[in-house]
Image 1 (cartoon, rainbow, N blue to C red):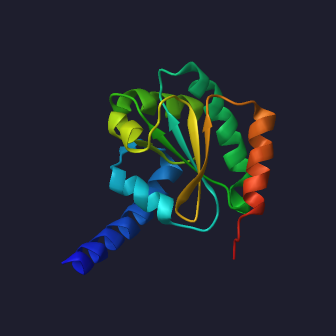
Image 2 (cartoon, one colour):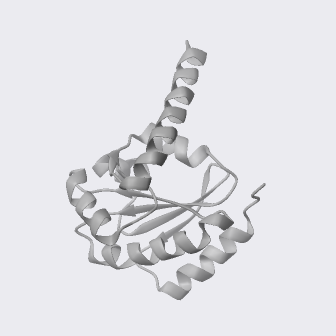
Length: 161
């Protein structure tokens, strides 16, 4: 039973990636995600992942997201992965912000449950994930230079083949 469930989850993930890749080329749609979905994102890959907890109502988040987008575009080919999770009450407000800021990295809506599940007590919060484990938590908005310095450190840990 567990193996069958695992196979279905893997197949669903492959389909979502295939469909999502073409959809993101057209529009970065904020989609709901469960704790299990976040867990699957965290477990994939050997390059550090920045899992960004954010909210449309959060002024520091609105200031930090364009900086993260800039670094994502600059360093994605070197292995930088960024995924944002909105903690808003509903995905609509975050979608407006994603469209306005033209964010290119994936943005999901997790709501309050995600905050509880991952012990997020303030936004913005960046969880640095490596090899399926949260290695570092950065709480609060940080300067552009701080973020770039950290990103450079994380990229050095990446083993792109």
